Image 1 (cartoon, helix red, strand yellow):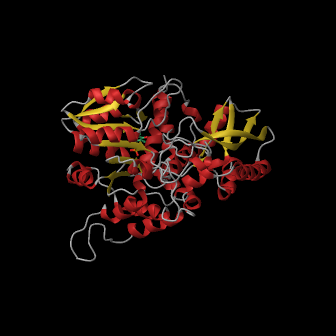
Image 2 (cartoon, rainbow, N blue to C red):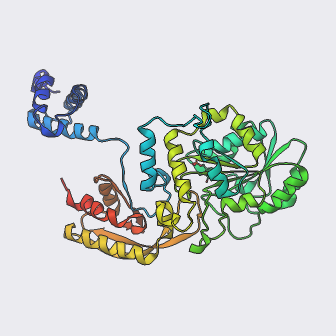
Image 3 (tube, rainbow, N blue to C red):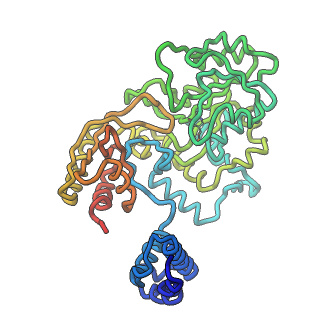
Length: 465
Ligand SMILES: *Cc1c(COP(=O)(O)O)cnc(C)c1O
C-alpha cells in the first residue's frame, strides 16, 4: 500500500494550468479543454499509484506537464485527417475512396461559403428541386431517360427496391446475394425494403430458365447485382442483362441492375475486362440502374439512380427519398465531377481515381525512383530499400480478380519487423498507410503523386521526434 500522503506529491490543477499558459505549443487551447486534460492525466496518475504500477516518489512536475502537453497536442489534432495512401488500392473505402480534383474542390468551397440556388428555380423565382441540378448531365452521359441522386449507393438500392417492390417478390441469382462490407448485404436490404427475396440458380450457375420458372403473379422485379468484391471462376454460368431484359419485357416485369462501382469510361483499354459501362447497361434496356458516386466514378459519396422516367418519378415521390437526400456540398462536387466527363479526352487526367487507374508502369517506376532517392537521404542506416515490381488492386468492389502492374518500395529494417514498421508509419504526420506482403513492408507508388514525394519522405524520417 502507498502511504496516504502520496496524493500530496501530485501537482495541483491550478498550478499546472498556470505552467501550461506559458508553453507556446498549447497556449491557444481553450481553458476547458486544458483543465479536462490536466484532470484526466492526474486521475490516471493517481490510479496507477494506487494500483502499484507507479511509485509516488517518481512523480515530478515537469514529467506530469510533459504528459499533459503530449495529450493536449494529440487532442487538438482533428480526428479526421488526411493520410498518404501507399496501399496501392485505388478505391479504398477505409481511406475515403476517391480523391477529388482541385476544380471540384473549388466549386464545393464556393457553394459552402455562400447561399445557393439549391432548391430555388432562378428562372421562375419558385421552389426548385436539388436533383434537377444534375439530372440532365447524368442523362446525357448515360443515355438514360431520367436520373436522381441520393446520399450513397446503399441508400439508392434501398430506395429503388422499396419504391418498386414493397410487398412483392424480387428474383435474384444465388451467385449475386453479396455482402459488400460494412454490413451491406443484399438479403438484408431486401428485407428492409419490404420485398420478398426469391433466390434462383446455384452459387456458380444460374440460367434464364431459373428466372422463368420462378416468375409468379407476385413477382415485382428481376434484380441483377454486381458481384463486387468477389468472383466465381471455373464452371460458371450467369444470365446476361440482355436476356434478363427480354424476359422482363415479355412478362412485363421491370429489371434493375445494382452496378456498385458504375464506370462511365471504357476500362478495357487498360486490359480490364468484363466491366460494363453504365451507358451499355442503359442501352441494353435495363429499367433502373444504381451506382456509387465515389467508386470508379471518382466523385463524392453519392448514390446515382438512372433509368426509365416512370421508375425515377416513383422513386422521387417515395418519402424515403427525403431521408436519403443528397447534401449540397456533395451535389456541388458531383456536378463538377460529372462536367469533367463531358470531355472524354481530359477526364482521365483530371479525375485522380481514373488517373491512378490509367497510370503507366513506367511512370510509376519513375515516381518510385524519385521517392527512393528522397527517402535514401533521410533513412537510418539500419534500413534497406529496393524497388520491386508488384500488382495494385482497384478496390471499391470493382474487378476483384484483376490487378494493375505497379512498382513499390520494399522497406526492410534491421531493428523493426514489418508489422512494427507499419505501426510506426501510421503515426507519422501525415500518417502513411502502406501494405505488408510476404512479411515485407511495401509503399505502392501507384497512388503516390510526384507532389506527395517530399511529404512522404519527410513524414517517414524527416521530422522525427
Ligand atoms: C459498393 C456497393 C454498394 C454500396 O454502395 P455505397 O456507395 O458504398 O453505398 C452497393 N452495391 C454494390 C454492388 C456495391 O459494390
